[in-house]
Length: 556
Image (cartoon, rainbow, N blue to C red; front, top):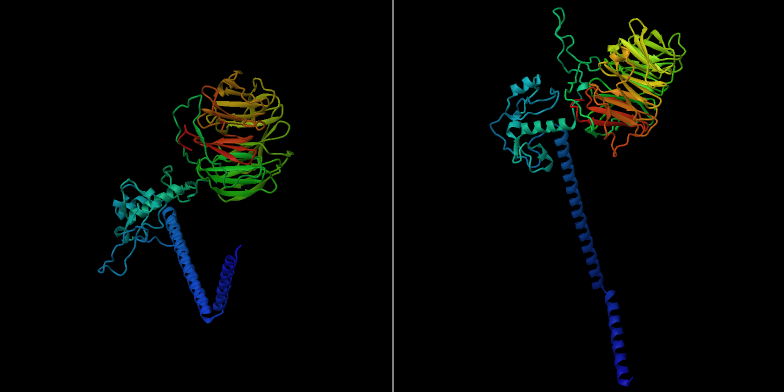
């Protein structure tokens, strides 16, 4: 490297070092300090402004969400916390106050006297007298501002479901309230069975009786016919059904379900099992809310059944005693041990259709007859072999029994004598019995899984051949049930997974699509049809009550 280039490099280094020294001196000067302080102050002010903006945005978002939630609650459930104020909704038209209007007025709109909120197509055009006449009660007050208020049901997306026509926009406040109440009624079906003041058409009272007596129909005390029978015949082959939410979805059992049964009103269902609980559910197919739960501490329930008059539930297990639950007074009574009897288990019983007699399976072939009213032993019947199953017929005047000797006995409960005894075709030991509602048919189930269906009059007349022998199951037949019009016979076995079949009785063929590949019945232990056969419930060993809708039947 030449001498000239070396001097140039050294000069550049010297100039750079001098510049750095100058900068160091400027940092320590007062002007540089003031500049730094000014920058920090500006930065702090900027941060404060950003925090304020962020807080305002969060507050506005929160207030907007709260307002949306309040509007949603009001649209679904009506006013929960304060009276409904029309004109405050999003998009509601604001009406200018009338200076000539009085300072106060009497408000007489429909209030607490409404039994079941509904709205009709022309409710907005009806006058108050018509509403009073329809509802049967005088309104407490009338809100005149309802007529002056208009609500836009298109601007808010949640309110668009209230439209009756696609191009409908503005509706009156009165119509708006009626539609909200109707929407609430759709989402929350009316629990008619629990209405203590519900009036029904009762028989005409005699001249000496007061017209007011019997006007209140308590569904648990009176058992009026609520079901209209379907006269259309069910076709064989494929059954139209759909799976609904579980009947006990709101409170599943922690043990196997041993009993399910519908109340005669078609809305109330009981479920009981080995977890020592008796539960009641209102069956609507959508939510199936739980009504009540009773804990029986010293008795795992093996069977529970409504009295046909709907007033009580009888519960039993492998105990010397049984329980009665009074639905009207919500009282549990313990009955037994029975005087003069040594039975250690009263787990199996049947109740007569007239709600007068309870028949228990006893030891050594004895059938114990208990009065449903007094809960006292009123008589016994004796079979030659052991008794395993019972079924009432002829409105409760006759009793069928079967057991270890393979015979079917017919008993007259008036004389307490056996009027007929015959061998069940192909049966070694009968373990289940059931009769149709009109007592024209009965079915027997055996330990081999064979089910025989008989015509009762022919069987009593000496004909031993069954109408049909059903061999679709190969293990013990635990439960059998005819539906209300005897077009379906349900049979099940506790020892076989998916061990349940539905038989089309007129053709004696099994429905091919039951239960189907998508649905599992687990190990079914009990079943029941609703009074109109609209619902079918199946309780299994997993603690659930499966609920199905049979589309052929329109009523529950």
